[in-house]
Length: 63
Image (cartoon, rainbow, N blue to C red; front, side, top):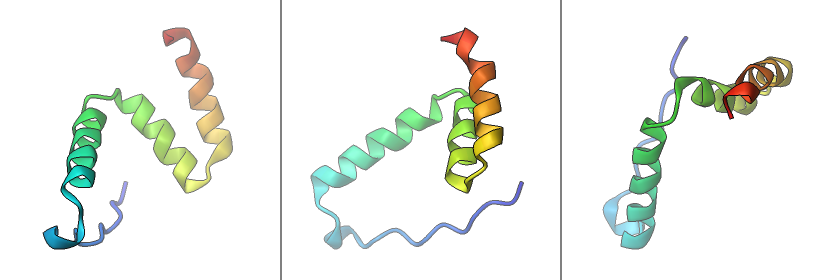
């Protein structure tokens, strides 16, 4: 799977410190999420609705 190019991070001076801290917490949290859930999010973002729905059905018994 090819990775998308990430935009360069904004300069430190343009991002309020509180927003930066919140973003850092989100990024750290996402690293602990199950790979299947991350895959589901990626499929939704790509517009692959049927594939996302199928994976969602597989995950239902886990929750």
